[in-house]
Image (cartoon, rainbow, N blue to C red; front, side):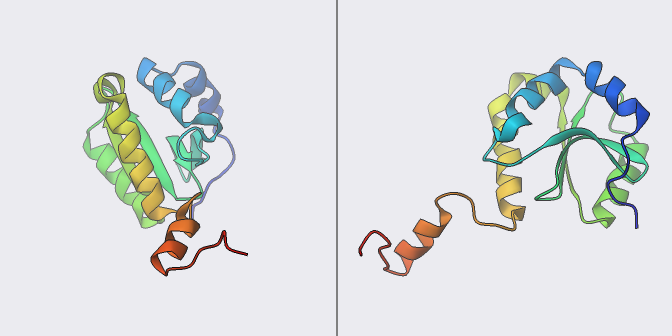
Length: 136
């Protein structure tokens, strides 16, 4: 089964030559800026290089320009999803013009697939059960 592999020699070039949309998205995804989820960019998965990857949630975020939207992309998505990855695709124009909406979509997908509760979720579960963790 193909998994995350060695760094593809093209990964460094893709990081260096990233589009404006990829740069903007990376600014918001790096350093756990989005909901505390860790993303990596230009990561090799099987024979493909994914734009942005959150290993914790098995989410891949692709920034698509004019060269995307082809049958090749559909095959690629099918392959990655067969390995358990969720692929989110956003047009570069949407990333640049509707950044907040794109980030919200990514965050919701990550929260939905997160194996661990995020900060504050434990407190709300206790409150629903009528428990108060602040009482000694």
